[in-house]
Length: 172
Ligand SMILES: O=P(O)(O)OC[C@H]1O[C@H](OP(=O)(O)OP(=O)(O)O)[C@H](O)[C@@H]1O
Ligand code: HPA
Ligand SMILES: [Mg+2]
Image: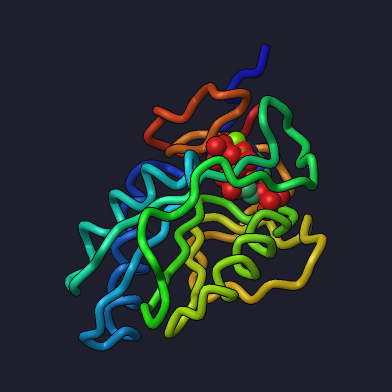
């Protein structure tokens, strides 16, 4: 059975970081509208906290993709389980992810969304595991760089467990 063996990032530290990221985003977009695209399911908690701290006109949409399924290893194959509801042509699209690990999910998503001709396309992730990267992607906003450990909590799962934890823990 998987267990949380250690707390990696405390609830209050996540809260502070989410606020800081929101203020940087607010400044960068300088009064423009943004379409936040949450990557389900993992980003659901992060995006809901992030958007409430961004004082701009924000629209919300979601995509569901899955590469990990019930495993702790990326399958490397990204499947779109749910596409966007809206067109994104000429919109400022900000992809909101919970974690970037191999980068394969985002690489696929970025290429897919770029072909729809948004006005701009940027990426915001709460967590980044740079040591594990298998492809080259430019990430615009990163909350925390973390070591190569399998983590869960704050929306992120291990075999669908632990998404409801308010902190981020290491899974043992
Ligand atoms: O950089 P990568 O190695 O591609 O991994 C990152 C992706 O993996 C997780 O999603 P998962 O497939 O577990 O789906 P979930 O969000 O529904 O848990 C996570 O939420 C990211 O979307
Ligand atoms: O460390 C992780 N935990 C949970 N899901 C993930 N998907 C990529 N990396 C991780
Ligand atoms: Mg998962």
